[in-house]
Amino acid sequence: MSLDLANFEEQANEAVKLFWGNRNAAFAKQIEAGNQDAGSRGAVTAGKNMDGFLGLARELVTANGLLTAELCVQRRVLTLPGFFRPTKLWDMLVMNKGQLVAALEFKSQVGPSFGNNFNNRSEEAIGTAHDLWTAYREGALGGDAPRPFLGWVMLVEDCPASQSPVRDAEPHFPVFPEFKGASYLMRYDLLCRKLVKENLYTGAAFLSSPRTASEDGEYSSVSDLTSLKSFVTAFAGHIAATAARCEAG
Image (cartoon, rainbow, N blue to C red; front, side):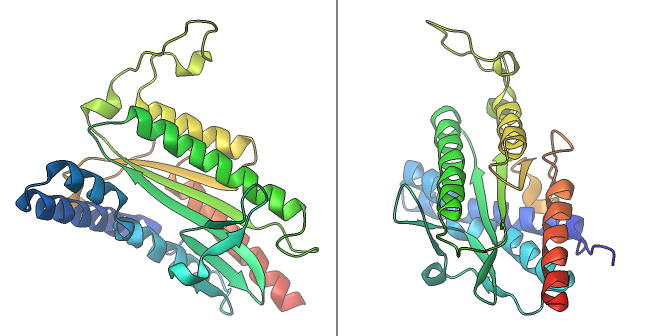
């Protein structure tokens, strides 16, 4: 059985349009209220900005045969146990017959400030995965539970501030060579590549997109490993394998 990628490119274009449309509308509303700083933050953190990508994930689950899955997107059903903390709230969970099939995070960042936000997002992604896998090892998701798919999707504004080389303070020891002079776009791509290579996430996609993409849904990837196609293919494969196991069982 071949994988069904659910026409992901067209859906991704629509998801990007929705992201920038919601983001720009929220920002404009706050500007009208005379609070530009709050508007910028509110636009970045508004949960519905990435809803188009949640819709793509739902389509992939259905298209690849896991018809009995429960797709959790409401806050009250998005909590999983942790090991270092009691619980973690995810952006989307795929449950099937009481087992966790996938846990997904959909994050974004726009300018003008990228430095602290990049560090915060990095720490959040690393800590979330380490906490979940430790809890899984300790049987928090069921003693014989199959290994779930952990996914992280990051959308970042493509602009001069995210494209420009970044200098790092190195008062005692040098940073790794790949980070030297790397822009925030490159750093997010490096982060995603390392998250996958270190087995913290099954798939991690990094997309960059300009503000003008509200019109055409334009987005791009930096590397094949972190492209949306690679992420979608891995996720579809995991869903199809789960569906096949359920049929065999």
